[in-house]
Length: 229
Image (cartoon, rainbow, N blue to C red; front, top):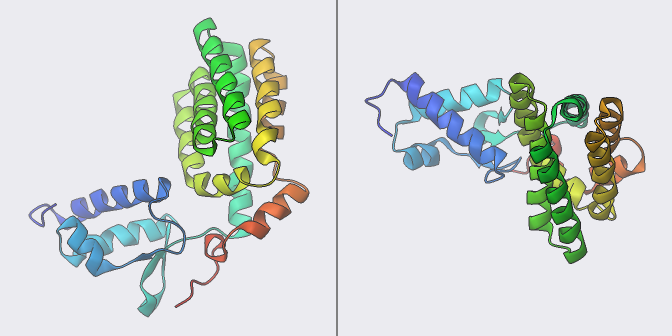
């Protein structure tokens, strides 16, 4: 990058790249964002870096802590619950619309992905499981044939992805996904929108002991608590 480009434009580009790194978990909640290091990384002055951090702070993705500098923001428990409630609604709607609109080729592809997911659980291959799980959900978004919904649910899922990985790692959660996905798949194949919506919402439920266990295993910095100096 170069400072011959207006600082605001450079700031936009840096902010976008940092967002992608956060979504990809290259930058995790609590990680420090040093202005000097970022300026060197992007080969710019600190001015566009500060603009990028300002944008991310306004979006709730970065905390600015005075002399401590900026850190990748963690979510509060309420913030996570609020996001997950909206995600469950959007995913349920995606499944409902997919059940009504999915084509034969997409339905066959969804079944094939589910079969691969079952195989990853049997092999206890977590990385392959995460990939198949993401494919399963994303194909349902696409099958909804509603681009605004697709964009919205993809963005929100990326925001909570790092937390979802901790849910996946909870005892029993890995294998429980298979019958839950099977229920969603069966409802979509039957073109039963209401059942697909209900099955997807049940799959994404964060109620009960499982949610308490999930929160207990999250690092403190991921939940918006103070990062040690």
